[in-house]
Image 1: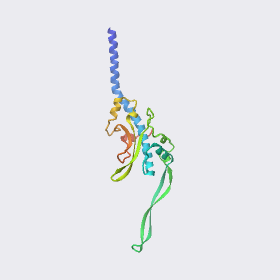
Image 2: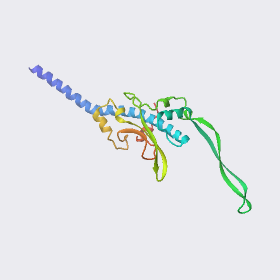
Image 3: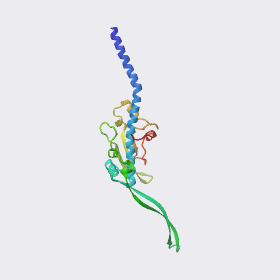
Image 4: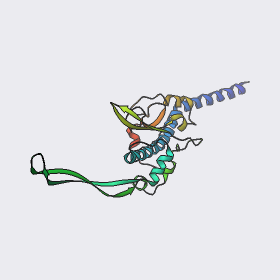
Length: 216
């Protein structure tokens, strides 16, 4: 009987020890996994933002879907221009004399490929709709529209993914806590996103630390 009790006590001690270890170590492991995965997601969201900004500079609005955006990156071109000042004398009928006229002239110097400008020889733009390391091939949600701001029509876009998609295999309690963060040092809210459909902004909701790291 004594041996049985000792075995039970040893099992209980091991069990309590594991629970203590897990309670201390689990948040550390979670933080490491989160930071690595969030960085990859944010890098892709930056690619989407850069591509959308190029799209808008060419078309005056943002792309509503990835097919249009990727096609533009593949085939689109930037126009390279140069602005110069010029002045000349021109007869003014009102005053009956020649008067100096100053104008700005914009010259087209050439064109450069959007693909080469943004991605060089990298073809990652072709898969930028895919959430990195997603368990079931989930894709980013993206939309674009125009909103009224102080009487002006402004183009906006937003791309995002739910945190729980990125942290699919992590402890549910830690993921639930992660979704409620409102902190300047954290990715705030339940999603990782760039842009906004309510405000004229192309910012992401991540802290500066994710902007200081190079793409892997």
